[in-house]
Image (cartoon, rainbow, N blue to C red):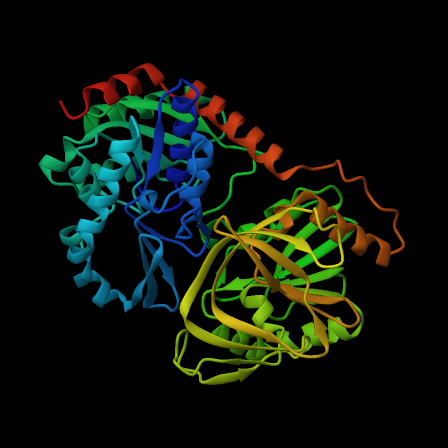
Amino acid sequence: MIQGTGSHVGKSVLVAALCRIFADRGIRVAPFKAQNMALNSFITQEGGEIGRAQAFQAFAAGILPSVHMNPILLKPSSDTGSQVIVHGKVYGNMDARTYHFEKENLREKVKESLEILKGQYDLIFIEGAGSPAEINLKEHDLVNMGAARMARAPVLLVGDIDRGGVFASLYGTIALLDEDERSYFKGMIINKFRGDVSLLEPGLAMIEEKTSVPVLGVIPYFHDLYLPEEDSVGLRKRMGALDGTIRIGIIRLSHISNFTDFDILSMEPEVAVEYITPGESLDNLDAVIIPGSKNTLTDLHYLRESGLDRRIIAFAEGNGTVVGLCGGYQILGKTIRDPKHVESNLESIEGLGLLDTDTVMAPEKTTTLDVASRIGGDPNERLEGYEIHMGVTRRGERTRPLFRITSRNSRPCEVEDGAISDQGNVWGTYLHGIFDNDAFRHDFLNALREKKGLAPLSRSRVFYKRRLLESVATLAQTVSEALDMEKIEQIIRRGLD
C-alpha cells in the first residue's frame, strides 16, 4: 500500500509507476483505491464510473479498468455534500455527516471488490487518500489504515519535498499513528526532489533514526510527462506554449470536472491553454471552452453573477469559436430544468442561448464508453469517448447534431449526439475525451488557424496514445532507478511478517 503525508504528494503517480514496473516483469498487477474523492472520472467497460487516477493506473498496468479498482467514488457537488458512486453506479447524494455514518455499511462493498481483485491478480498496489494521520476521521476510516488492515498490506509512506517540510510531515504522520499501526510502515519515499540528492543525506539518516523506518529512495521532480491530474489541486493557470499562435481559454467553473479533457491541447505545438476566471478578458482568445461540471445549474448561476456569461455570448457573436463539453454543452443551450432537484435547489435557469437546445436533469445517470463518428464526415471514422451526465438534452430546429454514436459499452447503437449552430462557430457534445482523438483534435486546431489566415499544421505532430505510453514508460524507468527496488520486492514477499 502507498500512503502519503497529505493530498497531492504523488501517491497516484507512484502507484501507476509501480504497476508498470511489475507488469513489465510479467506479474499480473492491478491498482486499488477503496475510496476516492475526485471530479475527474472515467467509464469502465462495464459502464461504471471510477476515478480517472485508477483508470490511468490500470492503463499503466496494461489491463482494462474495472469498478472494483475504485469501489467508492465521491464527487463533490457542494462544499459539504457529494454524489456517492458505489461499484460504478450512483448510490446517493449525501452530506459529510451522513456519509460518515454510512461508511460501515459500505465497508463490505470495499471488501467485496478487494477479494475480487485478489482472485484475478498476483499483486495489488493500494493507494491511500490524503493522510492516515487525520485523527478526527480514524474511527470510520476506509481508505488508509482501514484499507491496510483489510488487506493486511505493508505500507510505504510518501512525502512531497517540493512543498517544504517533508521531514516534519513524515515524522509527524508516523508519530500520530497508534503503535499497532506503525508496524505496517515498512519504508518511506521522498517525492518531487529538485537538486543534489547528496545534500539530503543527513536528513535521511536522521528521519530513519527517529522513525525506525528506512528511506527507500528519493524521486526527482518530473518534467514534460503527460500524467493526468486527479483533482483541481494540480490544475495550472496556463499550459502549453505561453506565447502560442493559437490561444484557447477554458472557463474555470466552481465545480469543474474532467478537465483532463484539455491536457492534450496544451501539448500541441504553438497552442496555449489558459484557465479563465471572472474579470479576465476573452479578447485575445481564438476559442473558449466551457468544461464539464458536477453542478451545472450552480455553475451557470456563477457565470451569470460574475458577468462571464455576457462576455462568452459577445465572443460568440463576434464569430469566436465556443465549445461546451458535457455540463458546458448544457450551459450553451436555452434552458436547464431540474424539476426533481437532481443537482441543486434551482428549478430552472436560462442558459446562454447560443445553441437551440433544452436540457432536463434526469435522476438516472448516463455512464457509457462510446464509439462515434462525425455526422457528414467519413462514416468509417472511429472517435472514442465516454459520457458521464445526469441530463437529457433535446435539439431545436436551429441546430443540427454533431456526432453519431455507434456503440455504447460495446453494444451497437445509432444515437445522435451534440449540437452545432447554423454559423458553425458554437458547438457542444456529451463526449468526454473527444480531443484525445488525434484527427478530430487536429481538424479543430486547423479550423482555428484558418480563421486567423494561418497555414494548416500536419496531422502527425502529436499522438495522444503514443504520448501516454511514452510518459508511462519514462515514469516507470525514473521511479525504478530512484527507488531501492530490491528492498521493495523483499517487503512485498514478506508482507507484514
